[in-house]
Amino acid sequence: MYFSQYMNAWLYGDEGYYKSFKTIGKGGDFYTAVSTSSFFGASIANHFYMLLKEKKADKNGWLIEIGAHQGYLICDMIQWLYTCDPTLVQTLKFGIVERQPEVRQAQLAYIKERFGDDIQITHFNDIEEVEVDYAFVVANEIFDAFPCDLLKDEKIALVKDDNIEWEEASDDTLVWAKRHHLTQGEIAVGYESFAKHMASGIQKCDFVTFDYGEKYVRNDFSIRVYRKHEVFPLFDEALNLSDAFQKDDITYDVNFAHVSEAFKEAGFSEEAYETQARALIRFGLIDILEQFSKQTTPARYASEADKIKTLIAPTMMGDRFKLIHLKK
Image 1: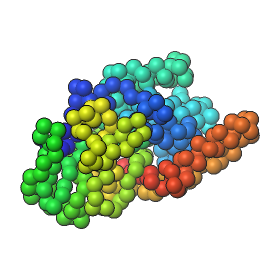
Image 2: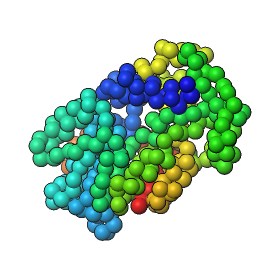
Image 3: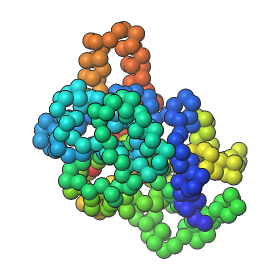
Image 4: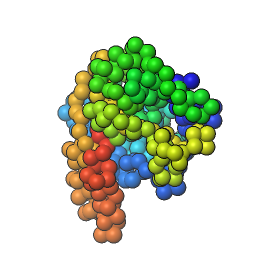
């Protein structure tokens, strides 16, 4: 099978990695910005609130998260929106795109723990089920979890008996690769259909997403496996694919030029593309931290400030992770 089919089975098959609820953080395979600090979600919510104040977003619309894991991000956003304007939790509707039943149950349990019965969440199996007039859609690290094909020297990867082999790539693949100046690396599969489904169901949309990657092609493989915070490049001799398959996370750097292209073809415009550090600061992260400092202990403030350094420090998440804001 092609590598994209193998990766799809790895992550989303009957026994796939994401089929069941996964721990993120110290006890899991990796960290995310969401698991690092609740101020990540508060900052994005603050940006949404500014759009609402400027009448650039609809207070009677939807806030929807894609790939919400336990639900920390959307809950942190709801909490901050309530702080800014308590009436917003009465006018806005809230949704999560999640197809795994076990993960849905974990999300609902956490949301109830945070808000009791005051907040109701609508679950969607897929983005194509979302049919609304306006939605602010947020996602963290979803594009790196789309299956991808692997290209090298005009050949494409196949997996046979958990071993990677190569065959001549199709003409369509080579045309795409030439247009993107790609000679070696990953080609994500599914960005175009995802963008089209979002565009067809949501009449007006602000889509804000964070991921690791760049807008340029490195012409090298970034695909790797995470196991308890240890990283194994896919072609590392120490990695046994049969042992890692469906048990460990597999990911790669996002080509944001491909993301932008797919969404522009679906009718979106690119509002912003910048480092996570610049985006979060622009969204008001530092102001939020200063407000927090006035109502907490010095020890708690120092703890949160340290977490925020992880989000914005250039040597940590600040420069490696990017924001892209796409609008329709």
